[in-house]
Length: 109
Picture 1 (cartoon, rainbow, N blue to C red):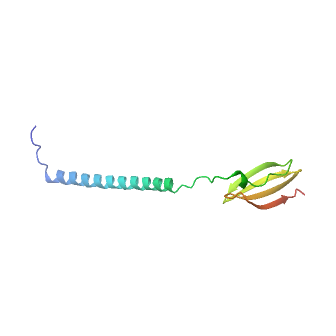
Picture 2 (cartoon, rainbow, N blue to C red):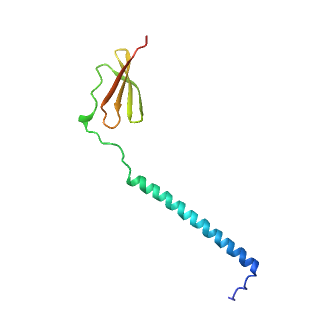
Picture 3 (cartoon, rainbow, N blue to C red):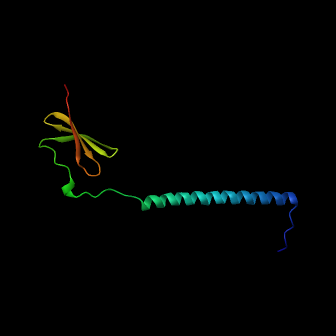
């Protein structure tokens, strides 16, 4: 193999510019990858998961003949719509402790 011919100054400037742009693009890519891996690592090591609840910590059972019509979870609360003897009521529980917080009878009249 023979030695390549030296580039003229204009071509050398273009090659230098392309190398510089490739270094910038590579640096940006590695930085973005490091940020993504850092966020994933943070979330994995600071993940709290679901709270294990012993059976004794469950809220009191619903009255006999009552059934849950709907439920909603949000902002640290569980809200159940319960039908008891033909009447509806809302029961609110704390999401972490499952302690009853409120009971609101709904009147259809």
